[in-house]
Length: 156
Image (cartoon, rainbow, N blue to C red):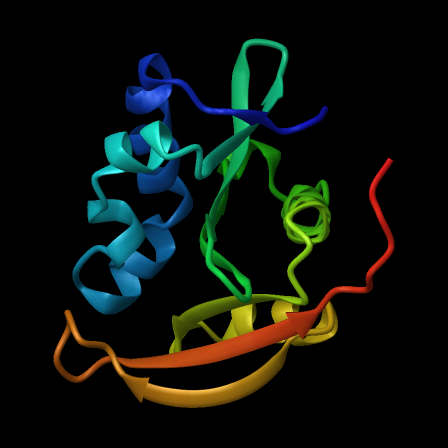
């Protein structure tokens, strides 16, 4: 299972997967997290959405933005039917590979401060917290910024 770039005809599957993957947080927050309400069409057109498929099923996805000095993960989502298979780690590995292929020194992400499980996962994977800030789109929510350097090894 290797990630592939999403196409516009994948849009409905991306929206469905994101909705179910973030459902526990929608329940916790009482409203959907930002990735659930995102318009993915422009991101697909910019080559930012990568899909992991198992046969014809969408198992997971990652959204990676390329910036001048870093890569930014906007979202990682794994279908509940595929959770527990380390696909989230596979997607994070892919983000590292993509960051190296772009010859960028680090990959960054941000998450909601109440997503403690995600923060623990990212920390265990080598991310460090670089700060906290108010969410500009959701008053009262706090974002946790995290970063991870990637080595300069080239991907084969």
